[in-house]
Image 1: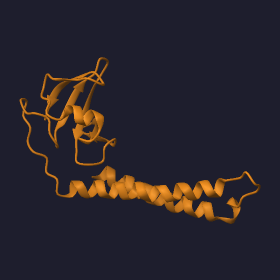
Image 2: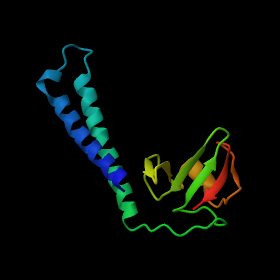
Image 3: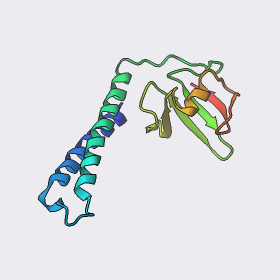
Image 4: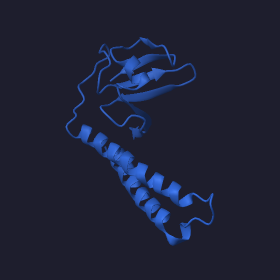
Amino acid sequence: MDALRSEFDTLQSTSQRTRAAGNDAESKAEGKYDTRSTEDNYLADGLPRQAHGAAQAGAAYEDFTPPLFGPDSRIDLGALVQLAFPDQTHWFFLGPAGGGIDVICDGMSVTVLTPESPLGRQLMGLKTGDSTASPKAKVRAVE
């Protein structure tokens, strides 16, 4: 939740600074092919959409309580999953929103996945010992 709040704040302030830079007298086009101001304004238009997405993701967690998972549980929304890839292991949290965000939990990096993501879709319903097709990985733990 804090990571989403931080992302929202960053995107919002970046949008404001970018909009100001795009409308500043110093960014006025110096020639026919100088598009800095236009590019700044396009960027400033896109950042609020991303900030809105981060705010919506944060709202999805407000009332979300992950269920308890045991070693024999099937992966579902709210599961913390450890995957073993050929060269490493990594933890993932299957959340309702905010896919792609990395958070630190108990000193470990955990990547948030949503059920709509390609890997999230593959994980739904699997249990410890099952494998994913692409990328090739084996479920080592479900918590």
